[in-house]
Image (cartoon, rainbow, N blue to C red; front, top):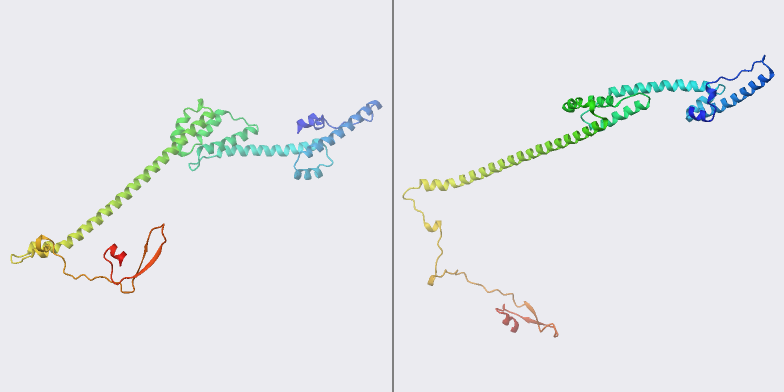
Length: 301
């Protein structure tokens, strides 16, 4: 804002007080001082208007009424003192936020480093000086507990390491740790699968053993009979392995069961078609008392 007022050549009213006319002075001097006073008052009005115009709507409504009858310098000094104090408080807040910042293992380290860099950039924008070595040392000291060994290694290299090199190193290290964690989880899941499969196999073997035991119990009476049988006990071989009876000529003897010829009764109808596809097709109906034995009999009957 001050640069803008300087461009308009009205910023002098903030540093030079309003001219005062000396009544004891010569008339020519009085006229000159009167012109300077009139111009200063006009420039002061313009300057105060531009300052109020640069405020937000809420602040404009407050300061327009409050500073209606004061000079631009008084308005400028009031705003400058108030917001410089707030800026100082903001700087102190950012510095305390930087020192209180603590990284955790539950979040990505590279993401937390970016948050820390944003705080540092805000502090630098407020006018504080933070050299690169201080930033590198701050980030290394705030690494989480899981990075204990890595933190020891980085402390030995912090003097010769830039911020870009540090971020690159941490990014590679974090990706490597994530891959190792995934590999460890895969190994645990595969071992659990092997244990489950082994327990199922053991159950299967147990069931097989129970089935074999039940089979042995079923065979016990037979084995006990053959083991404890007496000499007078006889076993008919045909009862154990029946021998098929042979007929004359060495052929197997056929069953004597009479064969009954099937009949469908006088109401059975057979529909046949004579001729080919090229000739006229006619349907013929026949009354068949007995089943035909051959295809020819079926045709001619």
